[in-house]
Each structure stands twice: as structure tokens, then as C-alpha cells.
Amino acid sequence: MSQNESSISFDFTDRAKKVKLEAIGAHVYYDDNHVLKDINMIVRENTITALIGPSGCGKSTFLRLFNRMNDYIDSFQLSGQVLIDSQDIYERNVNVENLRKNVGMVFQKPNPFPKSIFENVAFGMRIRGISKKTELEGIVEDALKNAVLWDEVKDRLQKPALSLSGGQQQRLCIARVLAVKPTVLLMDEPASALDPIATAKIEELINVLKEQYTILIVTHNMQQASRISDKTAFFYQGQLIEYEATRDIFINPRKDLTERYITGRFG
Amino acid sequence: MKIHEKIIVLFLWMCSSITVLTTALIIWILVKESVAFFEHVSIIDFLTDLEWTPLFSAKKYGILPLLTGTLLCTLISIFVALPIGISIAFYLSEYAPDRLRSILKPTLEILAAIPTVVYGFFALTVVTPFLKDFIPGLNTFNAFSAGLVMGIMIIPMISSLCEDAIRAVPDSLRQASYSMGSTVFQTSFKVLLPAASSGIIVSIILAVSRALGETMIVSIAAGQQPNLTLNPFETVETITSYIVQVSMGDVPQGSIEFQTIFAAGLTLFIFTFFLNNLSHLIRRKYQEKYE
Ligand SMILES: Nc1ncnc2c1ncn2[C@@H]1O[C@H](COP(=O)(O)OP(=O)(O)OP(=O)(O)O)[C@@H](O)[C@H]1O
Ligand SMILES: [Mg+2]
Image (cartoon, rainbow over all chains, first blue to last red; front, side, top):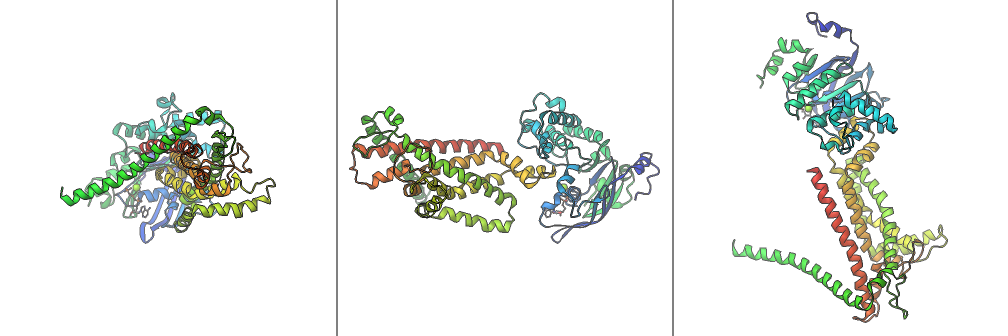
């Protein structure tokens, strides 16, 4: 793993953190298209890891490995291992529904259900058979508070979620995920459809969430990656080119390719 | 515009005017004959009398028995077609692999291509005798068999309209649902069903409208005996089968007996006209929602 961590103080604590996510020799194909090539990567608990790289390099595919959302793509094929808490999540006896309760996902475009704000956040509990009103109310309130949306919506919980602004909708989607108490959050360009103010709010939120969650975030925004992440992984044409502490990646990348990409002198 | 283009445009305009004109003509005749009818029969009697016996010597002109007969058959058919049609729609859209779907869909559409007279005889000669073993009091002509078979006939209509509505739900909602750990079943009924609800309601309304106007099956299998009842095992007469009965019979044109079919037809027309407009209204609102 990372060799020159010693110079940076927080990396000592990083070392002490438990390994949460692991990819071991992971290859992904869509039919003949080899889109991830021998990915080996360790992500520690309660850290934010940014996935960067040019369009089509496989970031989203890699992200979706951890909640098995690639399974819906007919041509998808995986070899190698993907582990969460040292458990291979592609083993036959794995319950995918439970896996996804533990690994929440936030998408690029806010995708609230055409239901009320309350019902959106309660959705995860409802599908797990929880329908007691008082219990739901408590969980919904907590989740909205954790997603820093409570003050803006507490007086209109029964209003349609689609009446919220884009930024609010995205935080609602985050609240919806938080409500089922996952330990991992996968975020695929969660702020790319939002204006700068809404983006700043999401970033602020992600920083707070780090205390309790292990976060993987795909971003095309280099400033965003450097602002919010502890470690950064640079993908290029299906390969993991460089994976280091974010400061190292942005201050002195070791690969020429990485430097060219982050400085925008690419292709 | 060149002259031959003008001729083409004129021709197309005439084609469309013919359909509009025909519709207007039909409505005009319906109304005109009905007005003549209501000069003899008070509209209050028409709406409240409990018997419909214009062909007997003791004439009564209460539309209610025909109306309940019509609604009874329609209700039974919707009860059959709706759950099956919606289930098929979800199966085709969310469960079936593409290959199976491409076989199932055309097969299902064959149901819609069967002539209704065949359905009618199927109801009378197969379904009713079969049901008689289970339902002792079942009449040879009854609303139940007719409604049941009419329901089977309507299934493809409901399933294909509902499937379109379900498929129109943006994929991002499916992704959201699955990523929260929902099963296909939960995604179908907790996310897609409510999201597609307006399209599904439109399909129900159109199906009701279709069932109200269905003629052959009920004429053959439900009987021709106006009967104010909600018992599905009895013989009933629908508005449409009454119209068939009179038009095929030897009732002289222009007589009050003959005019009854226009009053009955107008009643039916008011129902289907209202339902079709309702479905347009809902569809318009629904399109706005997704744009
Ligand atoms: N559903 C799919 N079926 C087939 N191939 C796919 C599918 N989704 C992605 N791919 C291919 O896999 C490769 C990686 O795609 P992926 O979406 O993971 O890239 P990405 O890094 O997230 O790109 P972007 O930054 O544009 O989101 C691309 O070549 C893409 O064409
Ligand atoms: Mg992507």
C-alpha cells in the first residue's frame, strides 16, 4: 500500500482504522469490453475516498461493484474479489437486499420518488416492514437532521418531494439512504447537477458524514476531490493508476499521467 | 402550393371531415329520435321506473334494468381483467426476460384479435355448462359467464396500456428503489405502481368504456330479459343487447317501440363519452407530470 504516508500526520490514524472495502484482482467486462483491469484497492473505515479519471474510465462501474448494482446489466461479468468487512459480497449466499441496506447509494441526478418528503425518507423502513408511525417519525426526523435538511422541510413533510429544489432533492436522497443506517455510502457525482451553493452544502454534509460512514465518491471536479477526500484514486482506461493520500496526489503525484490529468493537460 | 398538392390537401381534409361529419350525424339522429321518444315518455319515468317492457302490451319504460344489466356485466369483466391485466403488465415489464417477452406479447394480442362472436359462443357453450357444475342456480343465460369472458377479451387491452405506463416510469426510480434494497416485487408495487397510477387509471377507464359498449358477447351469453338484479347468475339484458334485439326484430320503424333504442343508445353514449373525456383529461395531466 501507500509508502510515503509517514510524512503526513493523519495517516497514522488512517493506518489504525479498520479495513472496510477491498477489491482484489478485480476485472470487469461488459461482453468483450474489458472496463476494469486488475483493480487492487483497500478503503479504510470512516474515510472519504475520491474516484477520479476521464469519462468512461470505469469509475461508476467500480463504485457499483460495492452494492452490486452492476448485476442489472446483462453483459456484466466480474472476476476477482470484492470484500466488505472481509466478506466476499459476490458469494452465492449473500443476501443482496441486506447488502444494499448496508451500502447506500446516491446518484448523479437527484431521484426522489414521486411521493411525499416523509414517505421518501421512510421508504427504506417501509420495505423492511416497519410501519409504526411513531417509530417512522423518529427515524425520518433523525435522517433529515443528519442530511441537514430538517429545518428546511420540517413544516411540509407531507408535500411532494418533487416540489423541492434540486439541491434539496439531493439531500433528501441522502436522507433516504441514511435512514436505513448503512455503514458505506457510494456517491456517483452527487453534486454535478447542482449549483455552487447547493454543491457547497452537499460537500459540507459529506464532511460531517465521514465521522460515521465510509464514503466513496466519484467526481469530475478536482477542487471538490481535494477539498473533501482523504484519499484519491485515479483511474485511466480501466486501470487504477495511482491511489494515495489526496494531498500527495494533488501536490506531488508520482505518475506523469496523474499529474497531467489533475492539472487539466490531458489528451 | 402546386395544384396537385392542393388537391391532395383537399382530399385529406375531406377524409377527416367525413369522420367528423359521421359522428355529428350519429349524435344528431340519436338526439332527434330520443327527443321524439321523450315526447311520449316522461324522463322521470325513464329514469325511475323499475321495469323495461316496451315490447309487451303493458308498456314500461324504466331504463334501470338495462343499466344494471350493463353495469353488472361490465363490473364482472373489470374484476376479471384488471388484476390479471396488471399482473401481466408487471410481469412483462419487470420480470420477463426479453426473449420471453417478445413471444408473450404477440401471443397475448391474439386474444384481442378473436372475433367477439366467438367469445360469445365460447361463453354460452363452454363456460356456462362448465360453471353449472359448481353453481347450481346458474341460468343458461347469465351475466357471470358473459362478464367473465368479456374480461378475458379485455385483458390484452389493460395489460398493454398498463405496460406502457409502467415502462414510461423513469429508470432512475427503479435504480433508487433497488439500491435501497427493494426486491423486484417491492419496486413494482411500492414505486412503479404509484408512479404509473395515472396511466393505469386511464387504462381502466378505457376498458370500462369498451366493456360498456361490448355487444356480441352479452347478446349471446347474458340473455335478453331486462332484469333489475345484481345477482350475476341470473339472466340480464344490457343496453347493447336490447338494441340488437329490437333492430333484428320486426318492430316497425318510427314506432315508439323503435324509438326506445335511440333513448337507450343515447344513455350508453353519454356514459362512454364521459369516460373517454375523463381518460383524455387524466392523460393530459399525466403527460405534464413527466415533461
Ligand atoms: N450498461 C452498460 N453496458 C455496456 N457497457 C457499459 C455500460 N455502462 C458502462 N459501460 C462501459 O463501461 C465503461 C466504463 O463506464 P463507466 O460508466 O464505469 O465510466 P465512468 O468512469 O463512470 O464514466 P463517466 O465519468 O462518464 O461517468 C465505458 O466504456 C462504458 O461504455
Ligand atoms: Mg460515471
